[in-house]
Structures are given as C-alpha cells and as structure tokens.
Length: 454
Image 1 (spheres, one colour):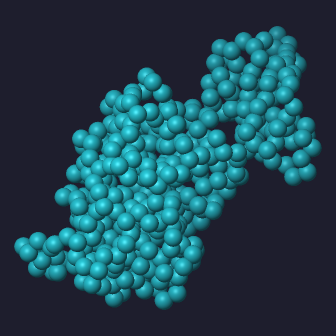
Image 2 (tube, rainbow, N blue to C red; image 1 turned 180 degrees about the horizontal axis):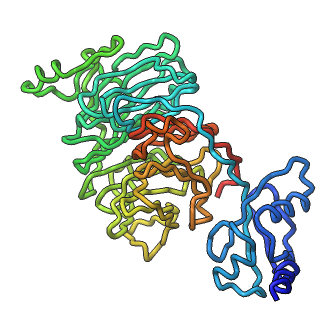
C-alpha cells in the first residue's frame, strides 16, 4: 500500500497557471505539473521552457495563501486543504541569493543609524554623540562632533553626492539637528548650521530627493520643514542661561568648528500628531508632499507647501516607529511596536481619515519589534526590516507568510562578541546592506535582481 501511495504521488498531476512580473514570461496556458515537484523542478521548467542560456533561479508564490513554496505541491495541498483537482495559481519571482557577511566594525556605543550615501564610504551615528565616516576598507577616516546627546539619524543630501564636498544632516537627543560638510579628499569637516525648533529629542532627519529641503521628526509631536540654505546670521537666539553650558559641553573632534555655525529656524512646522513622531519622509515623486509616523498609531500624509494634513491612516494599538518608501514610489512600509510591518499603497490615501477597514494593507508578521526599515534599491517588491531580536529579515511583499531571507547581525563574528543586540538602523544600496545597532556596524552582501516596478 505504501508503495502504491508513493507511486500515485509521483504520477499525479496538478493543473497550474503561472504568472510573473519578471522579464521571463511563460505562455498564458494551463500546465499539468507532477504533484511531487518542488521549487527546484519548477525553476528548471521555467528555464527550459524559455530556453534560457544562463540559468535563472526562481521562487514560487502560491497565490491562494501568499506563501513561498517550500515543500512539494502535493504536501502544500495537504497542509492547506486545497483539493488536488483545483487549478493552482502560482506566481514566480527571481530568487534572492543568500546574504553573506563582509565585515563588522565595532563601536564604543550603540549605532543608531547608518548610511551608504557617500560612494565608497559608511557613515554611522552613535549614542556617544558622534557621526563617523569609514572608507571602503572599514577604516575610520573622520569623526564629526557637535551634538551634546546621542545622535539618532543621518541623511546625506542628494545634491552633494557627486562632489568632493558632501553635506550631512544629523539629528540628536539634544533637541537639535545639524548640517555639516565633509570633504572626501581632505577628510575634513566643517559645521555649517544648527537647526532649532524642537523642545525634546529629534527622532529622525530626512532630505528631499533634490537635497534642498529637510524634515525633522520630534518627540514633541512636531515636524520641522527646513531648507538647506545656510544663514548668514543666527535666526534663533541662544538663550543666555544656556550659553555657558553649551560651550562647556561642546566637543571638538579632528578640528570640527561648531562655534562658527549659525542657528537656523524652520520654514514651517507641521502639527497634528498627539504623541512622539518617529519618522518623517518626503514623497519620492513630489517634494511638496510628505509622510510621517507616530506612536499615536497613525501615518499622516502632508501637503508641505500649504502646511496641512491631507490624510490620516489610523491603526488601532499600532504605534509606528519607522517608515520606508519601496522602489515603487507609491508603496510605503511602516513598522510598529505590535511586531508588524504594514505595506500601504498611498494611492488609496484620500482626503478623508480612514481606518484599516477601508484600505487594508499587507501585513508582515515578526518575532520581535522591527525597529528599522530599508527598501531594495532595485526590486520594487523587496524590503528589509531590522528587529530588536538582532535579526535582519528580507521580505517579498507578494509573499506575506515569511521572510525570503534572514541573517543575524554579527553572524560569523567572534562568538564572544556576537550577542543578539537590537538592530536600530539599515541602509541597502548597490548590493550592500549596512546594519547598525547594539553590535556596532555590520556589512553584508545582498545580491539581487531588479524586477518590474509595481
């Protein structure tokens, strides 16, 4: 009987319709596929049917459940209760090659944010109050001071990336943000301006795609809108009681000069959130629009030019802590303390407040709080999340049941130094992912292929 059952499994076939958003399309027809086939055999089928000279590995998503095929088709049918006579709809996508660790750079304190925005360099911000610049050999080439508290985030202004003179914007628990220039040739920096609005820690700072404007998000429930013009005089007066204290607490590293920088005021202030704002980002397609996330369990869409909130997306008991735009510009990822990442299509954000009942997002479940996000620079369906459990997970938003790849920060390092520290910052560019957190800076190779934008 066992032999007969095994024989039936081998000869039984299932009707399957394949679809893809890649460049490798099969004819639109029904295929009869052996029930015993797994991912590898299906990938071979696509390659042979298309006569690909260079083999391309594929993964397969069962449309009925939104999960990747990990076992045979028959085992999946039995596990999900799908009848063997039902026609299966399967979408295939290019496989993500396994990430591999390249290097690790220890820090004296937690790394709160990372950036790969300077070509051939890694920029980190730390709870020790410094912004550090490392070269491609992982050598510290410069450290910028000026903040008097933990530095929370970093943004490399886009307009300066093709110049030797790079403009860096940083935010801090000291309730300020700062602009500084860094010269990649001389490896020196100069303080340019300090940004003054907030009365409590600044969670994040981000720049527009042109590099002409900035957004700051504060614990005081305010969003600051700034231009990057350097003032010729102090636009915000220094309180006399704080002047002496500020001079005493200021640190100088490698000749940084903060005394000459001017105190800058915002262009405008956006108000509607009722709790800490954790992130604010410009729209990648319209610099007059922005999005913000808050511990008040809302995502807000803003018209910066007019200074009004265009839409409030409320999710009950889901304090949001990070935002990221996917390569498809209308797709927004938001992570929450409820251990989820939600994927919103911002084209559904109307002028009226709405809840999840009106436009339910894709939900990616996590084992711990995902504190940081970074979208794939080339694949409009991939996004990475960094968790408080020390694990970085890479997701294909078409498959919601589990990550398509994952790794632990510090994996492959000295076991005594590895630990399971929180991941606090991510940046993913040009096949490299920088990971910042309690374990310092980790650098990983994450090969991938571009796919059609949503």
